[in-house]
Image 1 (cartoon, rainbow, N blue to C red):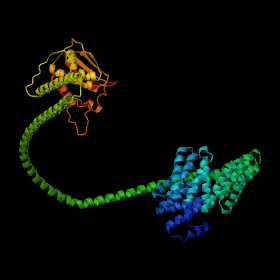
Image 2 (image 1 turned 60 degrees about the vertical axis):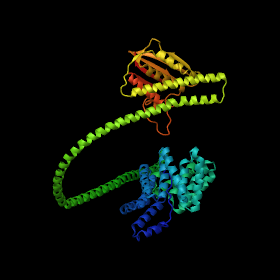
Image 3 (image 1 turned 30 degrees about the vertical axis):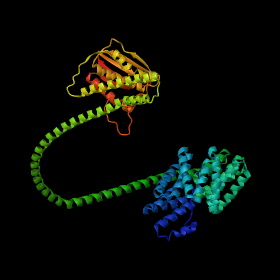
Image 4 (image 1 turned 180 degrees about the vertical axis):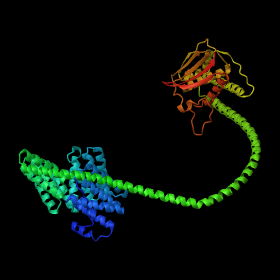
Amino acid sequence: MAVGLLVRCEVSFGQIQQLKNALPVTKDSVVYSRILIALAQKYQNRQLDTCFQYLTMARGVTKRIGFKWGEAEVYRGLGGYYSYRDNSYLSFRFYLDALKLYKELKDSTGMTLVNIKLGVYQHYQGQHKEAEDYIKQALNMAMRMRNDSVMSAVMANYFFIYHKDTPHMALASQYLANAYQLAMKGDHTRMIIYTGLLQADEIYDKGDTALAVSKVQDLVRAALKKGFLYHALYGYAQLADYSIQRHSADSMIYQKEVIRLGLEGGYREIVLPVVAKFYRYYELRHQTAAANYYADLMADITELYEQSRSQGEQDYMDYYLQEKQLRQLQLQHDFQQQQLDRKSLEARSRYLVIVCLIVLLVLLVLLLLDINRSHRSSRRNADRLREMNKQISEKNALLRTHDDFKNKLISLIAHDFRSPLIQIIEITAYLQQGAFSLQEAAALFRRLENNADNTLQIFENILRWIRTQLSGFVYQPLPCTPADLIQQAMGAMKEEMLEKQLQVVVQVPADIQVLADKEMLQFVHRNLLHNAIKFSPARGTIAVTATTRNGWVTVSIADEGKGIAAEMLDRIFEYRPEKKGTQPSRGGAGLALIICKDFMDKMGGTIEAENRSDKGSTFSYTLPC
């Protein structure tokens, strides 16, 4: 059975006879198409074949005059028509075409009514997700428009879809009540009858059969009085269902009324199942005359249905093929016009082109002569300029080298001397104030002595590094024992290790020797140990290990600190001036590590850093045995 009910607010043309009388005297094509559309809408629930005739006429007019709104209304009407004809495919296609035009026109009313119809279609096709999307769009748009007629139609169709669906049942019932109230408020007879029939079903489901039957009978009489044959047919079908469920003999009377109204109103496909049921009924009882009547009737309906289906699909394809041909002809016409315009332009421009070419040829000869002269002159100037640029580049490179050396030197001195000197100044200030006992003062004096020795060693290392940067430095490697040098370096840092309660595990064999400069190598040891102590947590462990492979010795110092920031790990041994506002990743140790890298390069070794998988980092250097 066809679902839903076409609802459209009737505001312009009055009753059917008045509309028919207006057709012959109407000269304006837009008004004429509006009258045809209004007649089609009025006949859709009265006489379906007549509705289709008016829709066909309106379709031709609106297409011919390019009346987009009228085309959309016709497509919507054809969608409803084919839903009554049980041709869901064509119904769906025409509804989609109508929705496309309504969107182009930004017609909220049309989009809302088509969306709810598409939601009904998708729901009964089992596409519940798509159906829900269309229904939500229709509800949202209807809420925003505040159009009682449109809202009533949307809510009634919502009930029709979801009144048996438990999660939506309460909301569907509320929407039906609202739809009925809005129809009563707007005195919309068709919607009053339709929502009343839906309410009767709801009453019947609640168990009040007598009230439901009485309500449907009243609504059927009202529908017949107003000429709404579809609504009367719908009501008789409900009464037949009630009677069948109650096993009442009235069901055959009601079903025959359904057949009568279906044939009278052109709703043949809707009543076909009822006709088939009567045929089977009389066939089983061997009532040949009655069975033959319904058999012939069933055959006629089926034949008309197939004709309507085939013709509708053929018309749909022909219509869109014609549109495609029209677009192709228009494109062909535009292309030919462009070709003619281009040829005309070429003819007018040909003479000017020839003149311009002659002038350009003369100018080109003069230009070539001038270019040749300029080229010889510019080549001489380029040679002189190239020589001058070479000299300037060499001087700039030398200046950059000197400037980079100065920046490294100043930054290193500021880094390595600030902390020891500040500590010495702070300790002497405390001693002057008499804030310590003799034993504490003695301990502080020892600390001052250590700081002074460390500062002196740092100063000597910086001087040695400065000498390596100057021309004339010659590297002379000697055998060095890393185990002894590491112990010496650790002795100078004993106070720091005791203060942080660190455990230093040295696993460097005493018989391992490397070729290196002792002072350079000891500078590397002191800096790597100092960094490990500085970044180790309290009561942590520092591991010093050594391995040999293929004539090379690798010494590693591993701590348990936070490790090196990922963005600094790949350039920790490179000199890069820190940008304003940034923080050094290793607390200022970067320049000392740069010197370590420089020393290792001069000694023919390598140095590298990596983060450990568990925690902390490892610094390693490699030198030849």
